[in-house]
Image (cartoon, rainbow, N blue to C red; front, side, top):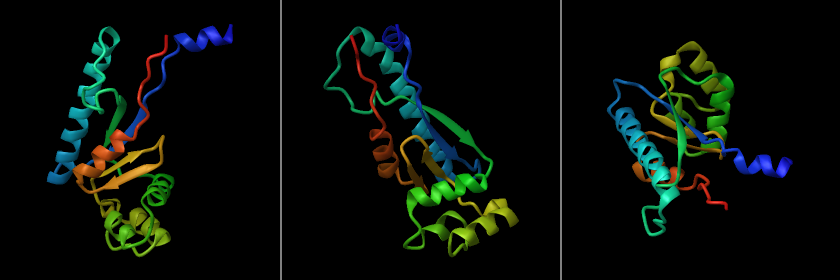
Length: 152
């Protein structure tokens, strides 16, 4: 009986969060790109139920739930983001302006929420994050999301 139920349940979509700032051109570009990819994936998912488009764009079947927020991350979210991107090569200071390490970043974020530099795109389900508008890195992250598979 449990086996039968699994065939009727749908896989929940991976959640991609965009920490967004409406006044930032880079953030607006990131939001536009993510919305386009998400919409394209949703449209093709219904087409794929009826026809086979194996040669089509590899991103078509990569559906995800896009969560856009202008709020800064919580302390736990910031720790997770820093874990995903790593703390070397000045990355912490690129995510939280002027921060020199994780504890400094947490303090600066608490003192000034605007010190968090946007855009930051986070794939919570698969442990990845991209900061700034880097189209190729964003597309790579989306391309690495688990694909929906047809099961008969």
